Image 1 (cartoon, rainbow, N blue to C red):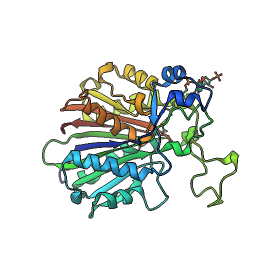
Image 2 (cartoon, protein in one colour):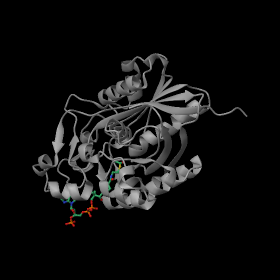
Image 3 (cartoon, rainbow, N blue to C red):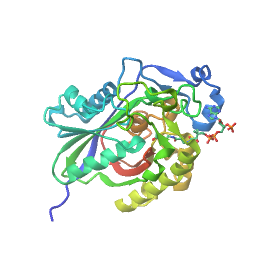
Image 4 (tube, rainbow, N blue to C red):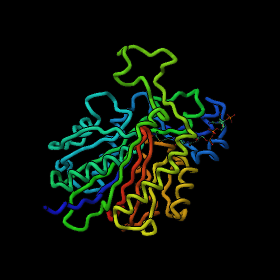
Length: 334
Ligand code: ACO
């Protein structure tokens, strides 16, 4: 049997809208307070798209930054995978829009939907294409603009989310494999706990506005998602470490999906990791869904919390339900 080709991450990028919505701004919209949001979630502010900004626009900006960071010519990209739950349209895919904009003339392109776990799924798929020898250079983007699907009168959900995009460039390597392992899971029986209904073809009246009761808002059972997350995230990290043949103690950093600081803290404690090993920028951006992991990693490199080489567990969870982890050795520069 032929040897699998190793893969490494060689670039990271991110993009967020300019407009900042603070907790004080939300106090004017719903019955909430900066104190409640800060203590229950850790979020201080988030970015929200303007009317003329799109998921594809943020995805393109993040992709360009990751390509520049990787120092590659976009013409060598073989595959683009965009993880998103909030694409501009059903088709063309956001990945095809990115492909045209960055000039990846020979790349295949498709979207993948696994909610907030999307980037982990995309990393695993990209690794498979590289490992099999099919492709050498893969661009992965996670982007979401949940602000377009939030009920700004629902204090349970509108305080949590922000818009953004993050991207990785992954490349085949003759040296050591640096995507040490991935672990993906799903449990569709929990799909009703976190959903944006009436947005797909099951809604029978295409082109019409749904009646109020059927509005296309994000719905969430916060308590149930919280319970799910604090169990699923440690499980995914431990399972991925086992596949990588390392111990959790061997990890330098945890780069978790940025949903709630209390979830992140509980997970870190269950894994026995120290606060300085945990990457978080939730206070500035809220939950940016598929974007949050590359956005958090990029910022941790910029502020030199992560100094390469470092072994990192990237871990996500979200709608579907989905969850998963990737153990990566980060060696690219900052
Ligand atoms: N401001 C003030 N009070 C609020 C707010 C708010 N923004 N939101 C809820 N409350 C109230 C509730 O109404 C409730 O009041 P009551 O006791 O009078 O009924 C009280 O605060 C407590 O509500 P809980 O839901 O029990 O609060 P909890 O501590 O569980 O925090 C939260 C809620 C922050 C949503 C938490 O459950 C959570 O973070 N869950 C996970 C959510 C998540 O991560 N979702 C994203 C998944 S990723 C993806 O794929 C999109």
